[in-house]
Length: 514
Image (cartoon, rainbow, N blue to C red; front, side):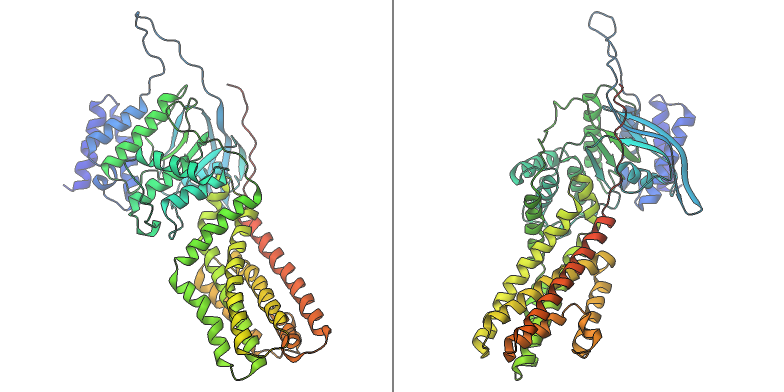
């Protein structure tokens, strides 16, 4: 007899011994086995010993609604909490394929509900609908405004520390850095975890990353918390800590209805006396953008290869044509544009899978795009200043200010170009090849031809000619005009695609009836 069969048999027997009907115990055991198969982990590894897990399941199933009074009577049953989530005949289809249909659910404050079912039946899809990430094909979904969402994949920003994630997700709901970090530390201790300020997420174990995911979902004290695979990768101790926290949410609430969750969507407690409550407020757009910009710069600084690329690429382009003054400066600008656009691409694609979760937490798409572009512009301007000093000392150019203008406009074109490519292309390799193609055509095309004029960096040729050859102002005007039109097209295109990709479905508020 296999270890899996022994665990399931022991689990089902424990459920029966704890008071469940044999048929119900077998059904729960089958669901538990299916979840383990879906996760790819062993039952012992995923849930720990069978008997403690059975006690946790039965404890979740049998939540007391009323307690006896000391005098022998019964306490008055508390009133149900406000409706936080309401599903009415909700269905989802992808083309001709029906995922599910006719789902109904009313979830109130203080209740814990679970979504269970076989693999591929649409559990994660349903939670995405509740989070506003995708639209239901049928029915009506109503939901409270303040929610937390912990997705199944739980992708994070690998080059940021847990404390920097606390700051980032705190900023989404308008909470300052110190308050968000202290709250994150407090919530982490409930899962027996003390985050290391020096350790980036890429170096955390799978179970610790999942703890971080749970903390981020709870950080801004949402009224409704949606959890997809909430304890995947947990050891037995953390698993028990998680269920203890679920029970605390339940016990603090006015009423509870719950089931043994493989994937849990939980309504938060109606009373919050036992947990830290942030006081969010809407931050000014520039303040939120600056948090994104600051943390994006930190990610770039921690990618040493990217920093080397930023420095070496423009310099190598310049050195290849050092003997020809005009071409060396133009190549320097093109190398700068290629480097900055590629770094912008990297910064955008690395955060692609986190951005929608940040929007659920409270960020606006414009803040995410604007902050990231701002970071790359600042990075590019520092590099442009260094390259300008190189030209100043190494080349005898009459219009040095025009060289600086050339480099600055190149940076301002490169950042929205990289952001636009990243919005269309989800992976770094394909995006880098797309930028390589653009730069190769830019270098090889006849600068007087139509092809070169519709490419993003044609303005470098006009501004370079004005700066180096001492030509008339018509070159300056053409270069600046091309720059302005190109910037508007690239920035507008990046904004439109980003807003479309990160848009959330607006869900109405549920009925206020209790």
